[in-house]
Amino acid sequence: MNTILKIIRLSKSFGGLSALREITLEAKQGQIVGIIGPNGAGKTTLFNCLTSLYYSTAGQIEFQERPIVPEVAETKRRLIKRCAILFFVLGLIWVPLFWSSFVPHTFFKVEVVLLGIFILSIRLLLVRGLVRFQIWAWGLMFVFLISDLWFAIWWLTHLLSSGPMIGTGIPLCYFAVPWGIIAGPFSIYLILQLVLRKVRQLYGFRLGPDAICRLGMARTFQNIRLFFNLSVLDNVKIGFHVQIRSGVLGILLKTRSQRDEEELTEKEALKYLRFVGLDGRAFDLAGALAYGEQRRLEIARALASKPKILLLDEPAAGMNAQESSELIRLILKIREKGITVLIIEHDMKVIMNLADNIYVLDYGVLIADGKPDEIRTNPKVIEAYLGGGTAHAET
Image (cartoon, rainbow, N blue to C red; front, side, top):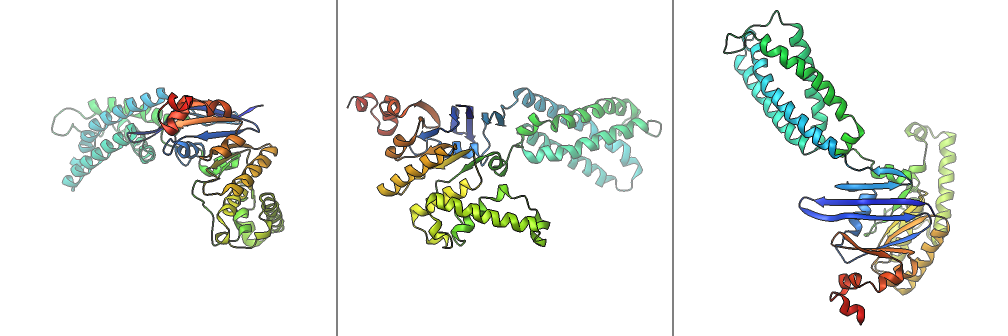
């Protein structure tokens, strides 16, 4: 079987709290992979990183041999920090050059001086945001770099009309020429660096949840997220959003292709409702369904996006024994369609009967992986759930 999903040393931190630490796992085509662990182990955080609801702090995610979260480029990280320092140093020199060029020739001398101080303060904040890799700093940086490039060209082309450096008798060109020679090429270089994919990733430019869904990764949530005031059928039709090709104009004009697409969407939605056993409730409100039926509806909506891998976050939570058995049969039917399933579950009966391979998390760390029989008797797993380590295993 081909590997469809590969996670390599994935980490996620929230400030000083480490939710995931160097998690490595993989799923093969058509497998059911279980992810278990005590509450707070980082299981849902892992799913959120996979679907781009969270951006990982470090590590890689490859889906169908495509890097959806590539390895963070440490060389680029160091380069940007060095460039930020040089940018601020150039700003310190820019301010007296700015004053020397404009203060002598304007009536609003105090205002120009204050403007220079204000711009220097903004540059300082910008450097701070840049080295912390904040997205607003990435965008604002282009404005300042283009401005520096303009000033470099302007000063290099107006040498004859420049006067002395403010407060001194030294010709302005002695400072403006070196500044322009350095700032011009540096601005162009940093602009080119900022638009590189590896640098943009440092500032959070990654595939969003919608793009992940289009690639073929769908999920359900730990807490049911349905449109309770819409019909069961409409909820499933929403899952087809990533497959729909009609644009706004086609929808407004009700073109033939849009009507055909709408009709096909409804037929497909009914097919998925039949697959999960809810075709008889198609026109009921989603909020009127029983809890177990709402879980199945959420799975049907996820399937409507035609995923290659389905992420189920505690689908058996709150279900009775009969509903859990029906869920097991449904997930096995999904696997028969060739869809890989990643499932987070606390119900050990469900996970042991379903999973081909199980990964165990505890406090954000992967403590075990293997076949269900291996996990069942693993001392680390028993200790994570029950405490007491090998004493429980021997019992």
